[in-house]
Length: 551
Ligand SMILES: CCCCCCCCCCCC(=O)SCCNC(=O)CCNC(=O)[C@H](O)C(C)(C)COP(=O)(O)OP(=O)(O)OC[C@H]1O[C@@H](n2cnc3c(N)ncnc32)[C@H](O)[C@@H]1OP(=O)(O)O
Ligand SMILES: Cc1cc2nc3c(=O)[nH]c(=O)nc-3n(C[C@H](O)[C@H](O)[C@H](O)COP(=O)(O)OP(=O)(O)OC[C@H]3O[C@@H](n4cnc5c(N)ncnc54)[C@H](O)[C@@H]3O)c2cc1C
Image (cartoon, rainbow, N blue to C red; front, side):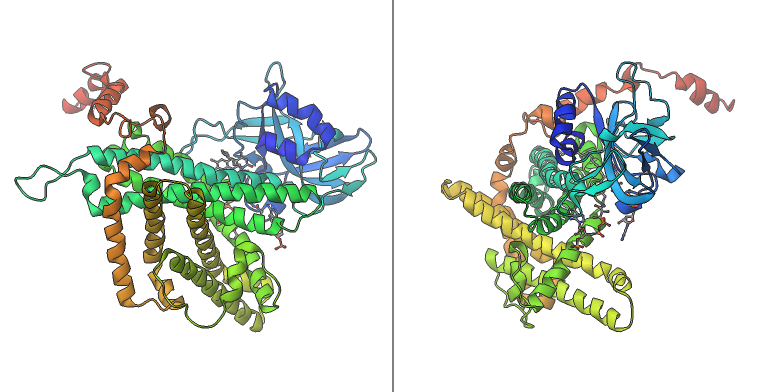
């Protein structure tokens, strides 16, 4: 996040000075925005940067314990610089949060600079290879030039000058990383399902009849139900990530031309896609672990590490709930645009046909299910707006009405995102497989159907509300879904092999390409320090005295 922020928030002159040093690793930096007391609410950050025209410096200060920067990766012991997001004061006026480049350690000795307090925040659920740290300032001065001045400037005499065309230019790095995290979710889920599917082809457990041999657990319908949605979702996330990256690049190019019109839609998309992809990936990686029984709980399976790493992504770079509420903000505006007969941006254009007041006729084809997801999103949005307005009519303020409706707002945003992801998944597969062999087309279509049927069956309650789906339609869909799992089974290992993830990347005794699971588990067990000697010295210091009643 250090380099992207240098690129996004510095003037060309500042980039010319800082970027080569950062890219050449002459300086190592991090992005210190979150504080002990605030992560989500950026406008509530407490660290201050007060401009002193006498010395043409900013005085960085941590006025309270809760103002200490907290969490930034590498902050504890690795970095010597960091980007600090602080409330900017000049001429006695606060201009809100701005980014500053701050040297925190000496480049030769690596000692913390005077006025800088820095340390490690302690062990975490995972991510323990990153020394996430804390940082406090005691009236620590930095040169005026260290304010990142692409979007706003403070002149030598302390005059504040706004440069950016849109109010959230300083939030740009977060949008960029959210876009990256969709791809990260796809990659890590692909690793987990490669491990779990390969292991499930090796693992034999139970035989349906007494004479028969034990079945590969991958033959069980319940195992296929656990795992094939993981494969389909890894593809869905990858294709949505590629699509989102293009949307991001197009928006960035437009902003460079002075056109910020597509930024709100990008913010809404990157928010909900980051939220859903990281939450889906984390829960499905855990599902892959469940599918591997006891051995899935071994660190040597690689799955606990993957889960610990990915589950953090649901929180950092914008908590799941918070980001869905950002998307909901955009959806409520879109609803109002439909009412006013105004044109809609592409990803919400389905809303213009959605408010017919009638239930969408159920159609179980892939396109029909996607239309059903859109109807479901529109229906949820419509009932949410109705709740909002009912509360406003009761005399509540907009903020109060909004807060009371946030559960429904989150539901509408999640449904919208599922509809967008499903649409992208299918249309990207069709676009990319135009010249593919019939077999490849068949398998990839089977996978996106798994995705669509799985989520339709997960949302039958909503579908009954907003479409004409009947009990027998649901019964039929369940049977079709279960039949599809059986069709995919013969190709399941080949499909995860197609992720082409080397053993060194998987780090898994269960998912290695050669399938020698039991030999690898035993070999990993031998590495345990407890196996260094036959009797551990704790026998003599604790167990034996206890057994002799001497403790
Ligand atoms: C390989 C990879 C590995 C990657 C490996 C990565 C390693 C770990 C990295 C983790 C690093 C971090 O976690 S860094 C810290 C990340 N922290 C966060 O993400 C904090 C989350 N909080 C926020 O983003 C903000 O506080 C909000 C958006 C929730 C609220 O901001 P706010 O300033 O209060 O704005 P708010 O009133 O809600 O909205 C005002 C208007 O601004 C708009 N707006 C808000 N944000 C944005 C935005 N980003 N871009 C455009 N527009 C925006 C809204 O739509 C709204 O428009 P209108 O409706 O008025 O038109
Ligand atoms: C592994 C890891 C690495 C990180 N790396 C960095 C980094 O490098 N740099 C950095 O600056 N930060 C980093 N962070 C911090 C991260 O960005 C924040 O933790 C994240 O933004 C969430 O903010 P928070 O911790 O304040 O949670 P909070 O916002 O306090 O969330 C607590 C609960 O309150 C809810 N909540 C909060 N506000 C609202 C609201 N308005 N409406 C409804 N519910 C609400 C949330 O949904 C959540 O359920 C990292 C975090 C982790 C876990």
